[in-house]
Image (cartoon, rainbow, N blue to C red; front, top):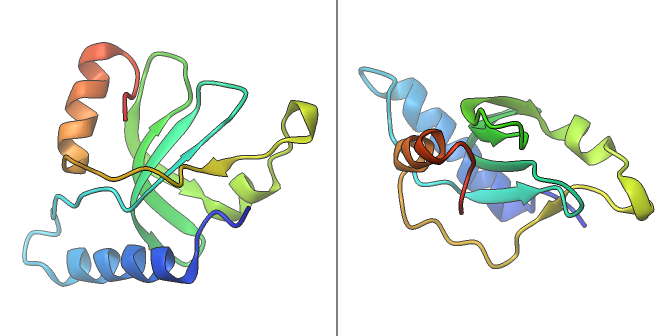
Length: 113
């Protein structure tokens, strides 16, 4: 499965450009895409991208979700048990901003999306 479709990448790039152009650089976007490990607890809610590096809420399933960046090519190369790989949640629709997801994840110790 392709992690980022052309449409998703365009939205992520648009958010990046909007944040760079904003006066304070602190736009609070709704996540555009959710990626996850189908055999583990890792989850990524991404809001923007520049080149290969995406930004969003990253939860590696270790009890400390945080806002940060991740390499899309690295996620695409990740080989998981049973021949699986990182997947995109086809049914995800954001109902909160990234800061609201981050606040809830820090309070719970894990990302619930």
